[in-house]
Image (cartoon, rainbow, N blue to C red; front, side, top):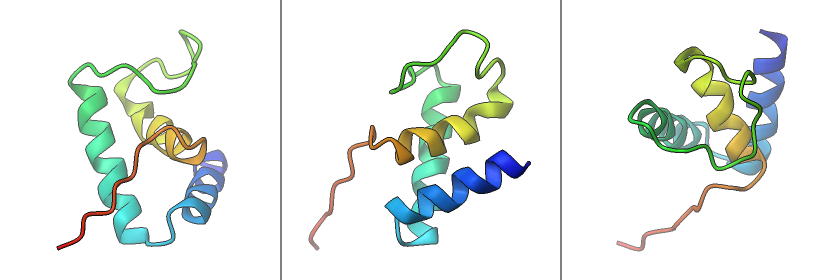
Amino acid sequence: MEETLELEKKAMDVIKSRYLLCILVAQRIHQLEKGAEPCIEIGENEFPTPKFYYELALTEIIEGNMDLEQINV
């Protein structure tokens, strides 16, 4: 639990809006659930079940492995 809170704080340093962070994490979790490959190098047992996709998505954001596009409307 403590590790997850630390990941959330670090992710907030990258994505300043907690609402945008929530949307990005939710979208990435859905992609991982559908079989998308992780964007970072992980060990086989590091994220053993879908329960850990939240932490994986946060880690990908922290390490800068997600492309963030700004759309002008």
